[in-house]
Image 1 (spheres, one colour):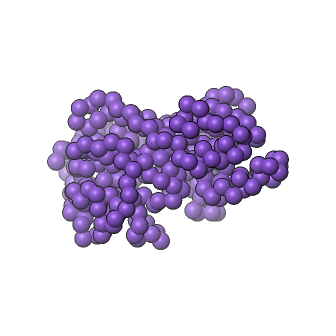
Image 2 (cartoon, helix red, strand yellow):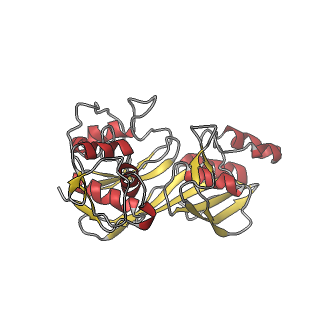
Image 3 (tube, helix red, strand yellow):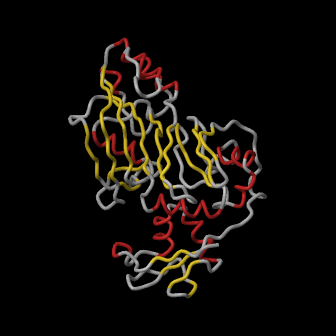
Length: 321
């Protein structure tokens, strides 16, 4: 297993706890990083480190992913996968809305991770506990494209690419209203809401977050936006669009009942839409082995197409509709 080295420590990391910094740097759960630390797989200046260690810019940080066989922790479950591409190192797939990516609070079965184990049993030894092959995630009700790793080496390289923002991620979103500018960028920090702890919010002093947008179509009080993520904070698109004043149609947490002010003919399809109208559309990255830039696109799901057509009376030309 390859040992990765970071030297010097970036200035913005000075004073941060080691476990927190490495989790953010690699885009991994902190408890997974803490497992590496307990197994002496994380070193500061060549010596095993503690998670509570506060980083200094002059230090040399090294880490080696801890690979374990997790087959006893999850039972593979049958289920369809919409595979867009696969090779010996990775799989690119189109996740349907309503499917949770991996086990978590309140969900121990019926996830994408369980299906992946049934189709690709070698993923049991890739990634953290309960997250076989998972290098990034989508919210349960967000549809669209994901890449998962089939080997520990691919997992490490893809995780690092996400952490270093070398992955291009494009989304499609149907929102209320039309932004004042045809294209723009939302750069506002995001942190957990101080009262509603399950929600995120734009908060001064939060983690930096940048979301780019471009208006593709606009009609009947709604707009179709192309969204580009420069960072990957929890609920980032949903929070930033709400702050912009154009929340996602169907978002039960950050959305608003804007449909009430629209013509009667469009109220029902908008009020009845059962999920945030968000789709992970395109993904581009360097292949872990060939280093060739590859790109993929997940077809626009039928529910978003139907919503747009029913509300606006127009098709989504050029987007597979």
